View 1 (cartoon, rainbow, N blue to C red):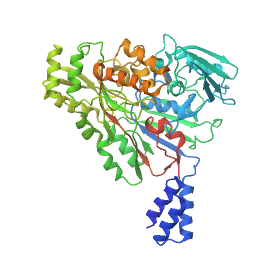
View 2: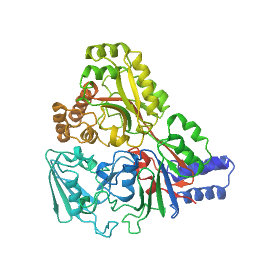
View 3: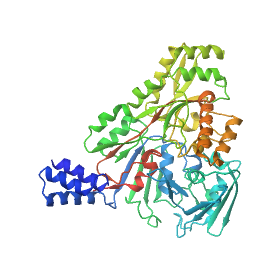
View 4: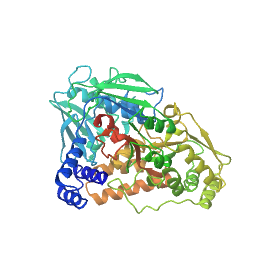
Length: 528
């Protein structure tokens, strides 16, 4: 009985059950008023942040080649690192909306072509320098330069002018874009002193924690920023990210108490993890997707019939059933699902069809095997998924050679370099950001080497289209092009599945990215 009442009390504190209903249920279960009020107080107290301690995270996606330069962040560890030491202008809130960060206000002209961001005052970088609008301008300039390798370059391409005007930074766009605030949430755009032009990999920002240990591929340690401008974060005295790329080792670290939370719990062992005492599974659906990416400008993948052959040769439902185990949904060779505001659900779902696959493979003229590169760290179950793909290809008469690569170096030497490999995307808050980051011809992270002038023009048109119906139609047309001609094979959209100790307080569901949009360490606390 007491456990049930405890759970009900937590629902009251979480706002999911009203107090009157709780008291009625408690009375029906024989609990007196004093006991019921006591349980409510305990539940409320358990939600109060607790300061102190060392909070540890076990993360996949770390490599010895990782840099602290946010421009190059391409996997989980660099992404989470950035959210410890840095801040962006705006960020994605738990409810999917915009949350002000280093920009305390923002607004636009009526035509959505000129945007103004008022920069927060009284904020210090970790080196003692005061944040100024000039630092913000320099940051945006660094990620916009012709020579930049920033993952945000596709986003920055739409900017025509930038300047400081008093306390504000004013951005002028080439074309109207109502989604610009969402674009400014890109995690590559961490604001750095002088924009990081002096030392982009210094790891100095305005975030809740200061880096004290930086051992790429091993661990990253932080101590609390005592001058943090934000009071509702940074509860632990210290936080640490341990790089544990192996799935089994990561779960073992959680079970033994070596870490308090882990990301990417393999779906196939979720039920086992649930049996670990004092461990909870946290999951959130979202825009993340596990993919097979082909370079459309590199033989043999520069032949659309070959790409179609491989798209028809993958069994998406089997992937969802055997790789995600229910923690996700089927994909349709587009990077967009129902989590996006302008998603169209009437594009025909592509299904496994060995006959069509064989037809297009023969039509492509390609002979011999197709080489697919993969690694455990490219997404949970990636090697198993590749082998399933290999088997389904075989039924279509296509030989798929699966080449297993080491985790260390995968994101620097395989992804975005080799013509066919496994990968994942965390998704983006809007279609515009997703397409601008990875499908615009000029995007530095165009990892399928997708170059389509009509697609580019539609992307720019959609940004300025204020009629929702027309805008949705444009995105539908864009999605259809990627679906039919792109280099993306997207069999599934994954939930974020993470393991968290019951001794961790403050966990919140945030569907945007892994680990509460990278902020689990800074927003959670140790209860004892």
